[in-house]
Every structure is written in structure tokens, then in C-alpha cells.
Length: 224
Image (cartoon, rainbow, N blue to C red):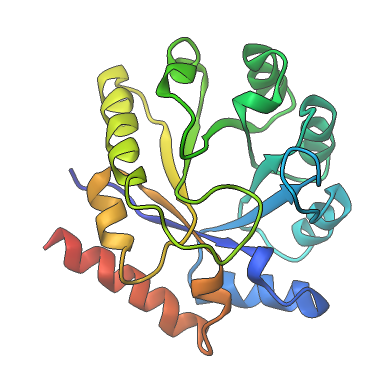
């Protein structure tokens, strides 16, 4: 199937001393989304950014802000990021007391809700809530740190989620986050993903437009 391919630039790997310029440059280079990894040193063993950073980024770009909450509890911060300009907000089911309530809270706040599956999270968490979602994010590394190596068995998980989405028959983005780079992005797309979080493989490149072109070229070659 010919699906649109969206590249989400993860600012976790950006130079935070010049974050506004970094965001502007990757969007100009062709990134479709700006991906914000929000970690609380509680749900995951790392601490990153809060709503103030999201609000600052929203002032320098019109690109949608794709907020991935690795926090526990979820609801209050989800609302804070919605107020700060987030477009999509995804969270981990293990971090919410009431998954259905959190999904509805995010949508009622004007954002598109997503659910995140860690490598070992069972797909059963989608059984009752998939129709309520706009995004499923499959982690291809364990959450908490950038620059990790892609876990190969998560491709099977991506394919299984794609089958569920296609059976449902409504548009739900299928995003993959962790270790995505030019050498494996085509395999990720072949498994069924349409949205690709790229962090160190993009911000670590000397030429952002060239790296985005390499990613899109690999996707095109995989479809050929």
C-alpha cells in the first residue's frame, strides 16, 4: 500500500544551546513533525524537557509538535503540553491509571491522542481503545535515552499493529521511535509504519537536507 511517509525530528538529539535554530533548520530541511521526548526521571531514568520548552518551540515553527510523554502520572502534564502548543500527545498505558480517560482528556484539550507500546508491552492494551486513537507509537528501543540500537523483533510488532489498524479501517498513524536511520527505515516502512522518529541519525548529520533526502530516498527505494 502507498502510504504517506512522515519524518518526525526528535529534538532529544539536538543542540539545546541553539534549539530554536536547530528546529528551524530541520523543518526547512524537510522534516514533517517536531518530536518532543518528555522524560520525568520517574517513569524512565532520565529527565528532559517541560511545557515551557514546547511553548518556545511553538513560537519558532508551524510544524506540528509531536509530544511523547514518558511520565507518570500523565494527565496533568498532558494538559500542560496541550496548552503549550502540542499537536499530538502520546503516552504509555503503564503510566496512566485510566487509559480511556487520558485519551479522552487529550482529545478534549484539542490534541490528537496516541498510545505508546514499549518493546515488551502486549498488544492487548489496544483491544478496547484503538478506535479512540489518532496515533500508535511503537518503541523500537526501550524508552529513556537517545542513540540506542534498533531492536529487530519490534518489526513484527509494527506489522501486527498495522494489521489491527487496517482491519479497523480508519486513519491512525503508525509511528516508530528508536534507532531509525537510512539503513533500516525502508524495513520499518515495509512492516507498516508511516511516521518515523529520527533523532541522532538526523541531528548527528553534518547536512540536514542531505540526511532527510537520504531517508526519503531509502523509503522510495524500498517501495520500488
